[in-house]
Length: 158
Image (cartoon, rainbow, N blue to C red; front, side):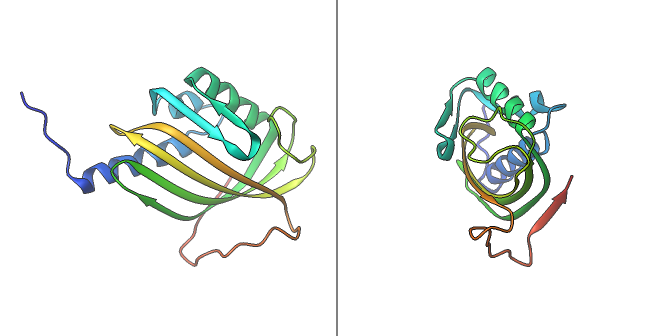
């Protein structure tokens, strides 16, 4: 039986679906489903906090620390673009710092944040091989809290 080669549109749709499912499962109850969407050689980076994780177990532990550190109340998808090998997403997350387990988060407990969360996902065979999360943390209502939100932005409230 020969393998059928997916066309470009099918590959892009599969990549977008995988990233959407990954984001949907980024919560304490479903994190294992999010992790299952990674390749065996996953690399997850958070450059603004100086973090690099190279195994699914390390990534899961980092997510659990994130869940204990920030409570995200709202997520706005500004834009996303995909190819056969990558997905780019641009979000704004409204959150409150509720703990201190996230390495190098520059805000204390109780701070309300609006974070620009830009992700680049490198995809392989419909799975995430590398996730780079560019987290631009800024105090809600502060001088850096200014974004151009398109009319087509999708908003999720938690």
